[in-house]
Image (cartoon, rainbow, N blue to C red; front, side, top):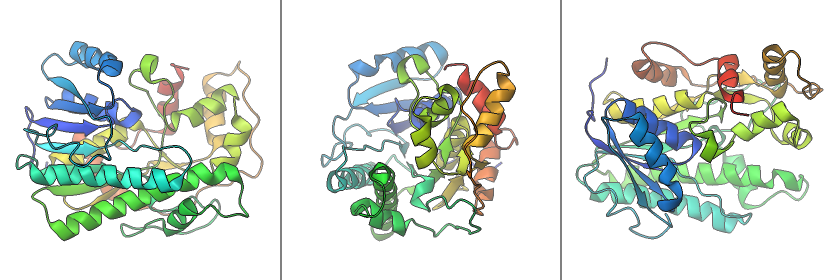
Length: 342
């Protein structure tokens, strides 16, 4: 096993801690004896999270702090005092104007690394990027990406939506642009300022699996895609927008973040959390197997498959350090745990 850079008993700061990935990261850190200080917009509205972790993890401390606006200069400076690591998960999406949403995400990320650079106790920082920061899915096209791949097409389309493309793709393009722009900005800032912490990023693809606290979190993020296939609600639109790509279980995503944070062997790396390719027909096949008496939407004609070759071996290795050597969670297992809550 690699050497620990941050030891149990240390406090880790996590933004977006009430979301799908942020809550799982906090859960996995607390389970390993780390303390977690989580940032949310409104502490009172997220009291359920404190209650949940206090009951589940008796030996570790969880606390919430309020950061109403992550774009305000210095918003994290006081909140990170005394912490050893920082995981920046939060990714705000403000309306439909790219000239608001993209700078919001970029400035939020830069405020995070600037605050970490001012706090001598912080030695490790991990940023939650996205698969879409490296490429758009290209069904039935054989191509490859590597650690230097960025979605330049996504940046172009996100800032200026193509007039000859459907309006319903605007949100997807804008998300691609804000994720790509933010990750590039953070790597550039770290490279230029050479702060006293190690920086890594994690690029997860679509997350399907257990929601930590569904009573309060509902069906967040990409979980909504899988729910649409289960219930049929809005499935026609989803099947148009969501093309074949790769998936990963959210607990695996969280564990890769944890490993990138606590182990010294991971330094200045982009970790691609891609478990295996999927399309909606694969998901429907699993649902029919799990629930043979239930009606589901018909298979989507001409769905295609993702043939992209991805650099996910390093992420798999890093995952194994915190997963006792086990590999990716399979699609059927992830969906079976998820649908219990639908």
